[in-house]
Length: 120
Image (cartoon, rainbow, N blue to C red; front, side, top):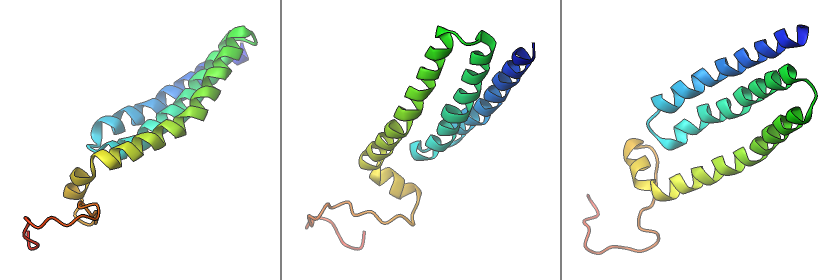
């Protein structure tokens, strides 16, 4: 009985952690800014929902599977976020620099283009 109540509370806390993550993903325009709220939802939201589900099911093979899913997502989440950030920076360099004027990015990659006016 007590574990059922704690399990339900954990699931509600996990759902409440997902709400700001969803709002943040849709509110921010750039992919690098969307990664932070998405990571919050992945780590905290997933943890509490999985903990609540494990408490509601009791110790069984299902609980072991839930623990393995959380461990797998916690191990692969930072790697995928890092790779997405690198790819976003490589593909979207000019777009980022246009939105944020204080970022200094060299577009020429070491090559000088004689056709362009240096004052442009």
